[in-house]
Image (cartoon, rainbow, N blue to C red; front, side, top):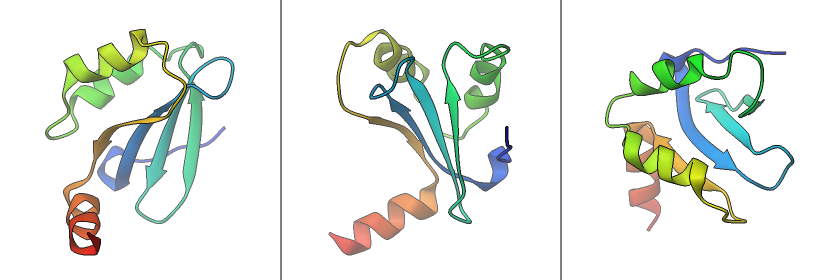
Length: 88
């Protein structure tokens, strides 16, 4: 078990490398929480994720339906995006 506050979330990734596919929630403090997409109560995550500013719900649903083999970043906090842009 574990918890990550949405206000402290840095990045949301869909990782298909495990079985089942997992959500990877990375907190700003570096903690990571892995949640199977088929975990009990996982449907409630959609409502929580929908509250993330700038989340593209269509992209998230497309990633869930994809049969891809690589992780897909679904959402990043603007501070993470800014840090990544400075490094490029």
